[in-house]
Length: 398
Image 1: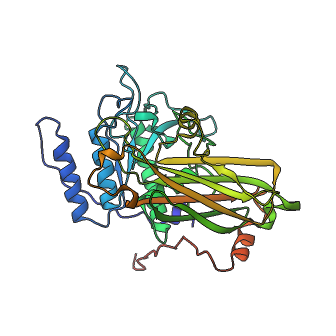
Image 2: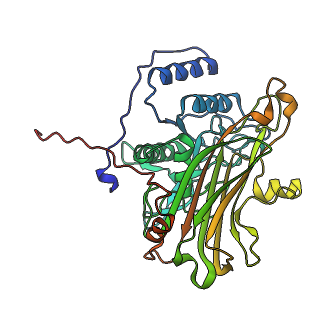
């Protein structure tokens, strides 16, 4: 369904009372909590308002933390702007852009052809506290305002992404905030995270919930606890992606963990996810095709190269020369790890379950290759379509 024919998800306005008192975070959080309780149908909420200072380097702000708590409690995706540069002090993202559960959006300028170009110089930049992978996305941040002049602000970009997030939610059979967030990141044009652009902009020809013939995207959600190994097996490799027993194509793996967090110092996330998409090599052994570095990797390397303790992970791999396959299937392997357990004396930490979301995309360099059809046929009913067509009511009397 083209965007012009998609129904715009309903928006609700709330009357605000005049207020001239000091900034009160507690009052704002209570207000948001009450509104979300009164309107459980709320799915996506745009917050294009930031504090005027950068987030701290090692500690998540109280604003960001409380917003994440609201998001998890009410199953709402907050889409937050990075904030705009003030010219004073550091120019990193401004709270609540450091909310781990939120989708943080930076600005991006158009190029000479009207497509997304370079980063917006007005927009604040990442990374977030403790090297949190913020922002996640970037989008057009230049608009023409009253009087014909042009304005630039990260708030414009966040509003546009909010609309796309709402449409994505409306098209999913079993939507969740993390699933919508992961699909938007999966649709972005970047191959890795950039401190100004995030993972890029969702500008591919297909909408986030769609694929072309040469691509198949799998998405699922689950729950994980520590000291167990989890395997999702039997992911058939389409014939078009394994000519001559070699895997040839692009792989993208997006993982999002709903972590256990705290506000008692640094090390905000107390749980982390290790996940890898695996294949059988020529020796018949399972090997990593894309995903986390092995758990025995040195801590400094794992933090620098793999964002080890970040709840969001995104991996890309293009196998131009091909990877020798020992079998026609892939599997996803995942584990959950803890740190700072002493902070939770009231919990049996090994029994705590955390929500996880995975997206696996397999893509041919030929958009016309029958990858999607081959995968559906090979899986033989073991997967279901995650997309629904929203009902559109038309008033014939108009």
